[in-house]
Image (cartoon, rainbow, N blue to C red):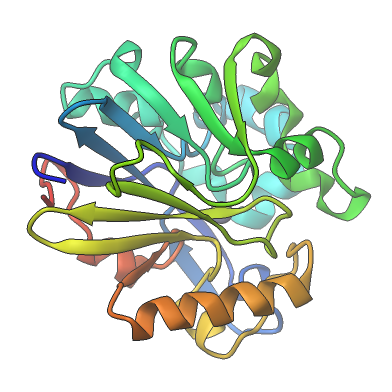
Length: 262
Ligand SMILES: [Zn+2]
């Protein structure tokens, strides 16, 4: 699509034991949380994921917001007010009210934290994700922060089921990729000069875990995750580069800090 361009933002620096991201992996890791903003020539600003809520930057309220054990386990203490997606958009001279669409890979607390910043946008989410997020299985309950959803019933929610070509022009295609959560989706953007790229969300938390098909401890279905990863590997073989949300090397390859890919 001529005129389409994108930039990435780290909307949630985390520092955690690697085994929280890749089961049984040794070591400790500083990781980004990647969101992206697209400027579509006809349809305006589209945001991909919303990162961590700004309350997490306030030491007095952060433990209460996520729960102290989750905050400590993911090492969110380094999250600053300027890391939140509203401030990051501001740095790109994009006002939150200018965001027309917010598209969610899934609704975990590092992806849906900024939901309330965009009361005027259309919020695009898989139907089984939004249902599951509001009543998750007990094991996954800590990573769906119900406080992120305080305004969810007042928002314009566009529920989708399966794959969707968002504007029916091939520019931004959503592909359902369940496993990490029931309704995870990835985004394939077709940029005029760079070509197709895939923002692969949490289909891999670290590239090594993706390559070895190792689950993440909070994966909803390891079987579905395997099938999704086989699909993602075929995308990669077909020449579509994958960028995982929490892989620092992948984030470093993406344009950020005022740089764009078109
Ligand atoms: Zn995540």
